[in-house]
Image (cartoon, rainbow over all chains, first blue to last red):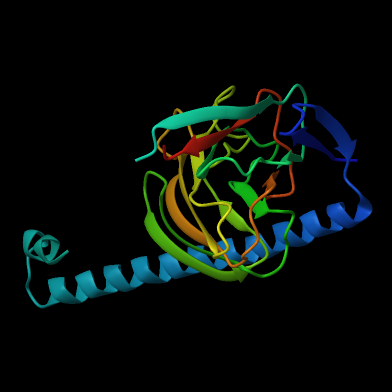
Length: 73
Length: 172
């Protein structure tokens, strides 16, 4: 069973206890929720990168040089 | 301008632990600061889950900017059950024996307003890929902060030698 450390700032006493079943379930739920957040962020970043690459390709097709395209960034 | 820093408590893991809780935090300071140096038992870059007063209600909002050596990104997460920062831990597949380096700053932690917090953190890896993040967050709760709960957000453990130190800061 995973453990947690409780550092009591009023006494300076540190104790280590096992997580309860409820805490373990919450931890798993939070990890799953974060995985969704992270996946969404990564998808958004990838979509942004793809759009940028597409825009740069279209500008190049119009005759802009690489330096000119870079100057727009 | 803060002019006094007092180390309230520090903890260094002697073995793997899932959560570090600072409890019974005295209300005698103006601000709080938690310095964290941590490494996860998992390979995934998940980071640290931050909760105040063990509150897991959907009242945490964050905005961040991140970079990892190849991609710069920004993110918004609202009404979450926790605050988090992805760079507050090193994943297990980063260079052996390296740890993250970062802090959580919490001003006016005893006020009756919602509590803001900021995070500045970077993971360490002797390679091109290494995450860093700046973050602003808010905990939409008016209670004074009396405990800070830090967990490995990926569901893993903080490995041995991971550490966290809680400082109290007075403005006079």
